[in-house]
Image 1 (cartoon, rainbow, N blue to C red):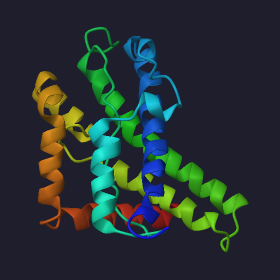
Image 2: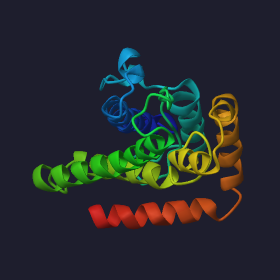
Image 3: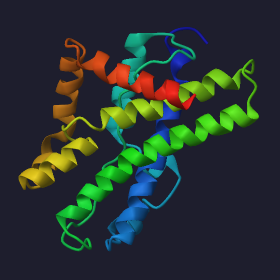
Length: 208
C-alpha cells in the first residue's frame, strides 16, 4: 500500500494498546469501589468501547498523514483512549485511588509491551514479516507509557499533578483535548519530543 496509507496499521496497534490500558483501569476502578466504568461497558477488550474521536482517530490519522509511509519503522504515535469516567467520592481511598488508577494506566502499557516482546522472542522468527510488526507494537506501548508521564491532560501524569494540587476534574473534562493538541504542536518544536523518544527507545531496547 502506498504512502501514507501504508502506515494505517499503526492506528490499529494504537487501538489495541489503548484498549488494554483502559480495560485494566476499569477493572482497577471496580476493585477500588466504583462500578461506573463497569456499568458503561468499559470492562471490555472491545476497542469500540474505548475509542476516542480525537485521541484514537483524528490525531493519530493526522500524524500518520504527515509522517507518510513508515512501514515497520519505530515512530512516535500520539493518542489516547476515551476517558475513563469514575467517581472519586466512592473510590476506597478517595483522591489517593486516582493516583493508583494513573499508575495502573502506565504500568499496563509497560506490561503489554513486555508481554508482546517475550511472546515475539519465543514464537516469532526474526526473519518473519510479523517480527517488525511485533517491534512496532512494543514501541507504541512504551512510547505511550513514557508520554503518559507528562503532567498534562488527558495523560496519567496530569492525574498525579491534579491530585497533588487538589484541583477539580471539571477543568480536565472541558479543556484536556485542546491542551494536548497544543502540547503536540509545542513538542514538535522543542527538544521534548527527542527526550520522550529517547527514553522510549531505551526502554524498547531493554525489552527486545
